[in-house]
Amino acid sequence: MSTGAALAVVAVCLVALLTLTVGAFGLRLSRTTSDFYVASRTVRPAANAAAISGEYLSAASFLGVAGLVAARGPDMLWYPVGYTAGYLVLLIFVAAPLRRSRAYTLPDFAEFRLESQAARGVASGLVVLISVLYLLPQFRGAGLTLSTLTGAPSWLGSGLVAVVVLLGVVAGGMRSITLVQAVQYWVKLAALSLPLIVLLVHHNGGAPGVRARLQSAAWLEPMQSPHSLYLTYSLILATFLGAMGLPHVAVRFYTNPDGHAARRTTVAVLTLLSLFYLLPPVYGALGRGYLPGLDAASSTDLGIDTAVLDLPRHLLGGLTADVLTAVLGAGAFAAFLSTSSGLVLSIAGVLGQDLLGRRFPAVTAFRLAAVAGALGTLALTLLTTALAVAHAVELAFAVAASTFAPLLLLGIWWRGLTAVGAVCGMVVGGGLSTAAILAVMGGAGGDGLGGAILSQPALVTVPLAFLVMVGASLATRDQRPPRLARTMVRLHTPEAVAVDRSGFRARGAHEG
Image (cartoon, rainbow, N blue to C red; front, side, top):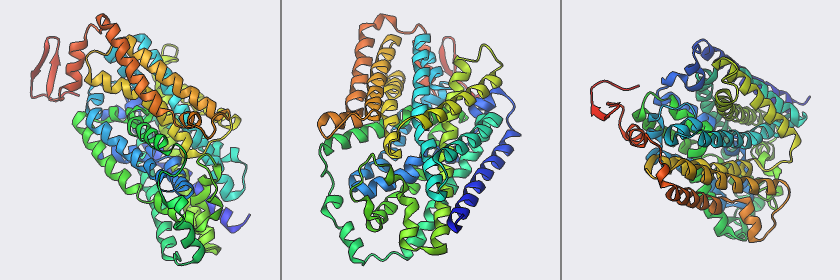
């Protein structure tokens, strides 16, 4: 085994060991069902913000964004902008009311707001679908990264992440994983920033080949690709609205003590994400200059996902490059582990309640659902063809934006939403966006407008989901939930105001 491969193995093992050690500490605190599902709603804003940032900054953020910028240029900067701005939308419209609903999961919110088991069932299916779509690129990215670093078969990296995640989730649930993800955010930030400092110090921007590639009009000028206007607006819509509909993001706001803490958490998340997303575009620019093989790469080319890992070898070489590559590999595995943990938690929360909850004790059902979700997705990862990590994640955002974003925005802010309207909108938005994903995975598409819509369907599916949800609700306005007035009061009343059967009245006691 080469020196570089040995260092990479050590770095990956250290990250896995750190994950398990921190998770074991959290295990000492996990005792009740509420601990496993929502950490007993006691996570403070600073810790919760680091944990949210840790699980949100996935393989797409750590590896994919830099590769896309290197291959496609400034148009791809909308990825980090959209990933961050989505939290601003969430802060303004969703964070506090979602926490006040006191639900465990998005299906719990659907049932609470609409008083419908059918709406809950559709929401449960969508949570599993979105989580699996998001989990696939995490497992695949782990396999690709370990293979790039050590030459090991790709299934080994995917399996390693699945096993470590399962050990943490099954042992301590949300309480344990919160601590792990908070630590992993800082690991990822350090793993990107420290090598970047070294690379910039040794960067020779005056080399003729580097300068020519960076000044190429085909790369530097935005909106040069076919249908770029549609693709840009579709990407913006998917990322701006998709964040609020991601199950592993939404469940985090149930762990805050109250709505005010949920808002403070979101502000802190915006700060942490903004700090992190300053770095991948710089790697992308360096990759454009020093990795000429990316010149012809497309947004679905898996080679772009290794651009960050390849940079040290092309700029420096020798032991220094091996060390920096190992550090980057450690950060990448921290990204895979933290995001995968949140997604497996989301799957376990839904399947544990809706499918296994009546057959097993709550904690046992949670653990069995976590095992089924992780191993099932791992098997699917090994059997399906690959998409570039960032593009695969964007498709998960498109499904979330086409389903849960309309449900949350209309459910929180419009009294007219009915269960029939919500179900119709989620089925239409989720069905069309999923069909587009399956078509792309099956090789459909092309260079025309139809191919652009299939590759980024949000600009079509999101407005259609809103229209169907509103239209079907207006057509069934006589079927509004019986306790609608009381529900809306809870969603929009601060916790310092107590809610009783007759409405609400001010009171000094703090509502949990």
